Length: 495
Ligand code: AHR
Image 1 (cartoon, helix red, strand yellow):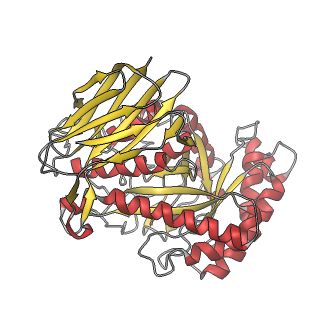
Image 2: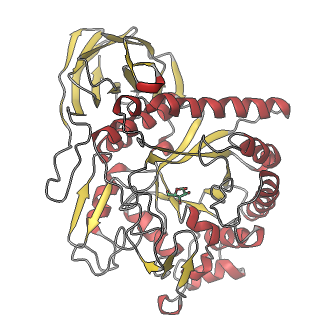
Image 3: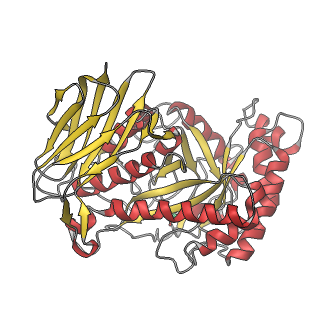
């Protein structure tokens, strides 16, 4: 039996709903054939896929990162504005693809309105620099009267977009990145851009590139140099992580949460260190703006085609359980992680897949939807006491991973629990010290004995939520039981 002890006064602060954000990159079939497909019977009159909008809108994602990813590091944003017939086709270095530029900044802002989100823009600090970054802020955020703002008005948008969060490049630590440079050089480039961008609009918030993976030999050091140099102009450091079960060991893979938590802790230490070194009171936050499972389809060569099939990862049950652990970690660390983006939304390592006349919902969509829709209010601190299991090379790891939010407005708890142990039945007892449980509003799980089970076009509902039994045993105790590995959400009304 695992016991989770809670007290609503013990919390890590308010969950910033921006940790439930998404990412759309000009990569493969994410933009074209994913969100936009004028040739599809499922598209609206502007070419937007209505079924995709209908699947993303209910998530109410606060931010949608755009336009890349690796793509942004060699992208000229002005190629994607103005009359579509005059936009150039370009070679995209990042994914060896052809970019038609039929979707650009103005179209993306319109799509964001459809799915009820705000753009989180990345600027090109690979092949471009401060001047181009300043210009795009002017285009997006300034009232008419100057060159780029007037250009926006000419393109049909009188009012500024007011885009708040901006990424200073993407994964500049990676040798694969167009314009990759050592940390010191990136730091100077980012700081110059930051000054000019903020010079145009003082209200924007900036995310400086950190490490693209924990395995990078410059891990944390690249981040330290960039953060220290850009300290005065930045609010967030970006971290990325993709989980992989390359070694085909599900017991090991299901304990990914341990490593995810470690990454967050690494950054907590780094921010404290740099702040101390600078004798500063400023709080820097983590923007975990690319996270997901990604290892089955790494093919990233578009062979100079438009909208090639790239990174079309198929997700199974164990992948969904790992995704749930990312989200749990962001919630538990609510004081530090303020932005996080699942990478990506559709077709490219996405929870949604499209074909011309259909939409497939992958396993990973479900835990994402639970968190997006129900993780609200304070992130409660958890006292967890329970058995461990053998997680392969990771050794003994607690079987249960959890996060709990308390929403004062509705006087309810949302309890998110994952069982990583495939081999034993795990009852979980949730004990609330200062309040009483009234009734269970909803109790759902994704679980099963076959960790490799996935949804296919032929069998689209093989992995989908089923009820889990959650019983109020006494006014202060709630019990749920996992019969096999899985992830669950229980919402409870309090008295
Ligand atoms: O999300 C796919 C790619 O992964 C992104 O373009 C890049 O930033 C990361 O390496």
